[in-house]
Every structure is written in C-alpha cells, then in structure tokens.
Image (cartoon, rainbow, N blue to C red; front, side, top):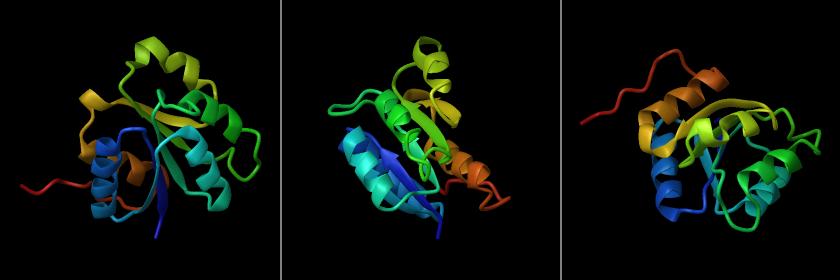
Length: 132
C-alpha cells in the first residue's frame, strides 16, 4: 500500500485528511509539527507528503529545507496544504523543494486531495468520487 504523510498542527485537519486518504486507498501516517514529520520521514519515508506551512516547533518551510539535506528524502514529492493563499507564500515555498501542488484548505475538498495523491503517485486512473 502506498504511504502518505499528513503534516498539520490541527488535529481536526489531520483527522479529516487521514480519513479521506485512507478511504482513497492510502496508508496514512500523521505528524503534528515539522519536527515530528522529519522524525517520521527519516524512520520510514513516505511516497508523498501533505504539508502545512504554519506550525509550531518547525514550520513547513523549515521541513522543506531540512528534507533537502537528506538524500533519502529530497525527492519525495510534497503537496502544500495550508491556510495561507498561494499568492502570499506560494512562489517562495515552491522553490524550496519538489512541490507538486499548492492547495489552500478553504478551497480544497477531500476529493481534490485524494485525486492529487493518485495523480502524483500514479496509483489509479480512476478519479475518486465522493458518495453521499
């Protein structure tokens, strides 16, 4: 099973994304801050990371920078999933590593997240359609 890491300081968002991605067929690990994310990535690298920008201990930008210093982590694709609009921070962080997408939480559905993971990882040609 393909493993993704969801990094967000909000337990609410971690749980929503974990539930959605699990339903989408992914093995999901979560981290509550950037340091926790780095520890988990070094212990068992995921195939994809969903990363928030604003977090305590270590920010998303700091994670991107730290991850580039590890050969086993630097090519792991990252989807930014944050509350900060791309026009405010996007260009700045897009140059920090292999960022494949930049989503803002208020404009992104769980279906968008699942479909981006499937697209990036090539795990399925069938798009995820939510059930009512």
